[in-house]
Length: 347
Image (cartoon, rainbow, N blue to C red; front, side):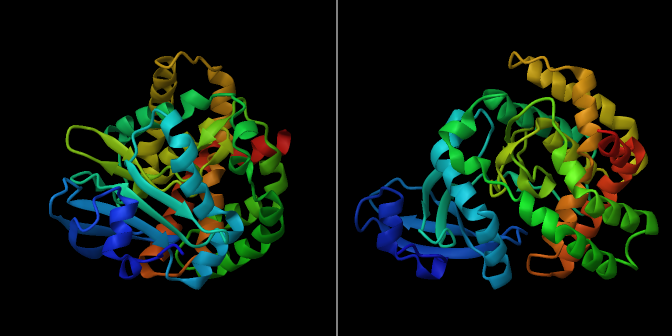
C-alpha cells in the first residue's frame, strides 16, 4: 500500500523509498507548501544518523479534497506526473527537481512522489504576474522541454502520454462556461465572459486546430509552476498535465497568463516569441515563424479554457477564485487582441 500523506510516512518506509540504510532516519517533520489545488505538497525535514541523506525533500500526495481527486482520476493527472518522472524526465533537457521516488497505485489515485527540494528557488506569484525579465529564463526552459521530443513518435513508445480529454471537454465545457459566467459575473468584464461563452460554443473548432508542430508539452506552464532561483535558474514543477500537443500553446499560455498589464504584454510578446524561436535554434530547430505565430494566436485561448475547466472542478478557495479570474482575464485580452476565435472559425 502506498502511503498518501506525510502522516502515513513511517521512518522505515522513507528509508526504503530514499535508498537509505535501515535505522538511519531518526526523525521526520512536515509542513504544507505550495498553492496547488489538484494535489497536496509538503516539505519534509529529515534528521539522519550514519547516512548522508537529504536534509529536506518535497513530498507530493493526492489532494485532501474529494472533488479534486475525482477529476484528477478522470484526467489521469496523477498517473501522468508519476510516469513523467519515471519514463520521460531523463530524456528531457528541462530543469526539474530530482526524483527520489515515484509510485502509483492501480487505482491511479493513490500515489507518492518524493522530490528534491529546490530551495532557495521560490514559486513566482501568479496573482501579481511577471514581466519579460522574469519570463526569459522560463522560455529557455520551455525550449529545453520541447526540443528533444519535437515531431517525434514519443506517444508510440509511451501511450499514456497521448491520453486526452476531448470528449469530456466537448460535453462539459458549455455547461461549465455558464457556471463560470455566473460565478464571475461581477468580477470579469462582459467581453471576457462573452469570450468564455464563445470558446465553449466553438470548442470543437478549437480542438480541431492542427498545429504546425507537435511535442511533449507541459500543459500548465505558468508562474505558479515555476521555481526561480537566485542567479536565474528556473525549475519546472507540477507535471500533472503533461501530454502531446502544439509547443506554441505552452508559450502562449505562459505569456498570456503572466502579464498583469495587457499593454505591456502586447508590447513584449512578439519579442518573447522570437526569443523562444532563438532558444529552439540553439537546439537545432527552425520552425516556420509564420506558422508558429498563427498557432500562438490560436492558443491564446488555452488559458481561458484552463480557467473555465479547472475553476469548476477543483476545491474552491479564495485565492483560487482570484487566480482563475486572472487566468481567464489575461489570456482573454490576449485572444481578443489576436482575433483567436476568428482564426479557428476560418480553419
